[in-house]
Length: 265
Image (cartoon, rainbow, N blue to C red; front, top):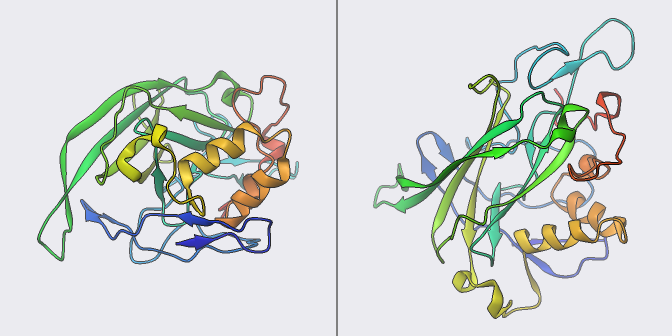
């Protein structure tokens, strides 16, 4: 479990206590941190990164923009990659069978993305603890139009999905550019549904926080209590995203010049 330290939070954050290995990805618990100036998106031992990997050296004309001349000096600077807003172990814990994903989108010309959710099946094999089951969900989702004008945080609540308690799910979100996904256009993670996977029965331990409910509640109250939003992100090494607007904020003026410079090489 992780703890919010020195930021007004006194409750324990329930993150996934799992070690998974399936088709080349694994999950390892990392201790959360307090203030992080230069966060690291990649857990150790080959665990899945929260950011899009393999980002090519693309110019401002690319479908998902990864480089831009921010200083006007004629040189292309690296930009923040697509990133999952999740705990450092990249596992979202939830009480809700209909999970919500928070994804940082760089400026992109894509208008469609694909989400695939698989159930992981435990195996009695120390080298491969999980195998994939049949796909639980696969469908296209809209990319917010505001992402065409600058970086945004998109919120997706997947009503069509109903998670089951105690099971482990792997998800992958990929933007589609002319029907295909660029190398820097995919993020993934794990999700587990806790406490009977019935949000209506409430949390039996008020001192334990589940990531899905905590980030969703904090995001809804962001304008009234921005410090709480900032502290939540800071607790998981995501402080640099604190001022990025949500995609449904139609009045936000946030462009490539405002790139948060998170997880930039």
